[in-house]
Length: 634
Image 1 (cartoon, rainbow, N blue to C red):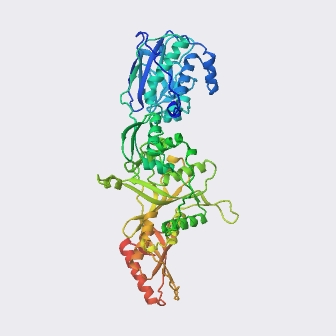
Image 2 (image 1 turned 180 degrees about the vertical axis):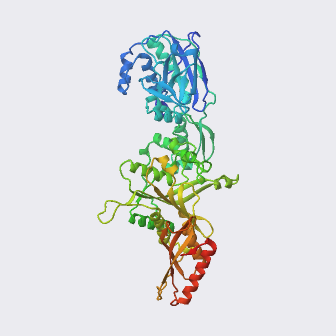
Image 3 (image 1 turned 90 degrees about the vertical axis):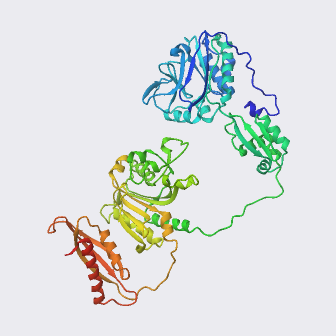
């Protein structure tokens, strides 16, 4: 705060020239094994200290800011942390086995007891400060029970370090620990203030606890952290502030805040911002600092008021249809949900799916947690998490839908000229259905939801947006998220939607007992399929429709879908619909056979169909079905 509040004042850091090394009787070696998590580590040893109660002035200063005084050594480290923003830790030097400090992670499952007596299980993502044999501290978070400073402590080792904020944040959150030290490390400290704080703490310990500094400062700093480089243009400063404040004023303010001017141009400056200013890495951050010092009250309110007019543009056809379908689903009893686009990578690695693979995930560079490590390839898992949450709260009958995007990485599309082309983002509408369709009704018996119900919802969506049945080809789905499923494709083979019963392995992963029916509609593909659709009004046919039924004996592996597709290909003009109204599998049928009862609706918009024309069509249908499916009439 001295650097930021010292503008036009006499504030300055206290001098540390009083620090001196008394002897080399207690050297401590330092080794950093994980240089990603620990960028800098420094320490020194002090021998023959007296651990006792702190003087009143120190206890009062700590009490005022809400810290409980413990003993003079611990109080000094807390005081230095609060005064200079550098968290510190003090070890009993006699507990530093092997006279060596090693900064490393621990094998998964390592037990560790902290100063408060609580047991924690450390893993490969927990950075530890260790002696030659065992861990002494969860780095930057909490000290260990056996290595702290107590009344019996005579020799101490002072630690001052810079730990990576992400490592400390994750470790603190993982173990449910939040300390003043972790709070500061998580937000970033000054890597170049490590030695200064160490010297100030040593000076205070010698003053209040006696002792002698018994080694030179051991400072391990493998890769020094560079200052932030920021290009600042004068016009940008004036535009953002709303007033021209002068080039000299800008230069005076930035230099007073310890930002170095490394290059001065006619139109601006190139600055080196100190590494401790982790909040100043962009030009707008520098402008904020300039304005804070210059004074908001010194920026006059102009005589004119600028405003942006919003002009209504062309209506978004996709958004309109999305709202239309959302209203339709709500009318059918669905609830809309909204899940995070970030997901667990373990879903894709553990399930080992044939469509949504681990290699196709879009990974997040700096994830907040492992639960949010990748972008979702499918809407499925977010909806299942919502289902589990509701089922656990005694709400088993659920109908959910969600509108959102999915993200897939296709390495085959990657090129050096356009690496972004390997990343695919698509809009989807997903539906989930589980539990009972009807329950507790006086008029109807309880009835479970079925796949046919979900199929009807999807086909009604297609009909609502104008996607005709003739433009859709239905096939069996090979997506292994389903135990049974259907795929809807356009005539070119692009998938429009998939519907099915979720597989047992997915239900088991989420701990679900009831069947879950899932539909995934590729909304971008549907929008493209109806892009050239035009609304055409025509007169309702004056001529009657004709109904004909066929009882077909087919092999058990033949699906109704096969019959429907053959019929529609055989008679494209007069055949209006094909419906299955009965399936029989039982006695009096040959082994390996089943019976389908199928209804065909025929209609001519220009004339009444006579028996001769109807019989000719039905004969043609029977010929195709018997020839292609080996069907027999019953």
